Amino acid sequence: MEEYLIIERSLPRGGIPDNQSGKLDLMKHAANDTLFMADLIETMHSFSTVDSEWWEHET
Image 1 (cartoon, rainbow, N blue to C red):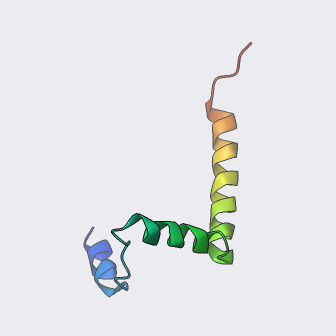
Image 2 (cartoon, one colour):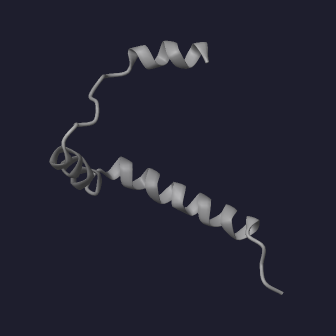
């Protein structure tokens, strides 16, 4: 936890907007951000694999 707090202090403080239109603008930008989309696709793929292994299948 100590290491996390040290790293957290060095990260930029962009923050999330308080208003809804600012949040929607961030979401629109994310859809065109190649790094975000690559991470999203990788995460979705990982979860689909885990979900198919974890869920009980009907017999």
